[in-house]
Length: 255
Ligand code: SF4
Ligand code: SF4
Image: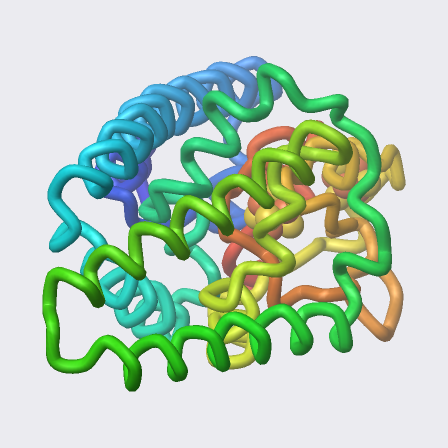
C-alpha cells in the first residue's frame, strides 16, 4: 500500500496498515515522518470527537432524545468489533476520544490496576449496568422522553466514573470497564491481530510504553502471545513507534 493510500485510510477512520515488507522498505526517517503524521491525524480527529462529546452530553440534559445515542453506539461498536476488533473504541467512540484528547491532560498517567482489567470486575460492572438498564426500561416504557433521559443520566454517571478513574490512574482506565468494550473484546478477540516479526524485534519495550491500553505487543515474541489482545484498539500507535518496524497488521507473507 502506498503511503498516500495509507494516510487516506487513516483519515477515513479505517485501519489498514502497510505490510511488513512496505514498512521495511521505508527508511527510519520516513517511518518517523509517517508516524508523526498519523499521530497528528489521530490527535486532531480525537480532539474534535472528544469536544463534540462534551457538547452532546450537556445538550442531552435539555433534549433527552439525544440519549438514544447510547444504544446506537453499543450496536455500532459491537457490530464493528465483529470485523475489526475494538477499533471503534479508538477512532469512533466519542468518550474514548474525549479520554485521549482531553482527559489525558489531567491524568496522572499511572498504571491501570490489574483489578480493573480482570474478568470478574468487568463482568460485574457489565452485569450491574445491564440490570439497571433493564429495570429502568421496563419501568419507563413506553415514554420515549423518560427513556432518553435515563440514557443521558447513565452516560453522565459512567462518564463521571471514567473521569475519576482517568485522573487517578490513566485516561483509558474506564475502557476496561465499559460494557461496549467488554462485549467488543469477546466478539472481536481474534479480528485483525497484530503481528510481530521476531527477528526484527530488539526487545526495547517502546511498544508497551506507548500503548494507550497499556498492553504489551512485545509479548507476541512468546508462544502465549500478548495478554488481553482482545482489548487492542487497532490504533497503530505501537506499529508507528516501533523503531525497527517489527510490528505490522499483516505477516511478511501477507496473511
Ligand atoms: S517497539 Fe518494536 S523493537 Fe521494541 S519491543 Fe516493541 S516490537 Fe520489539
Ligand atoms: S497494542 Fe498497539 S494497536 Fe493495540 S491498542 Fe496498543 S498501541 Fe494500539
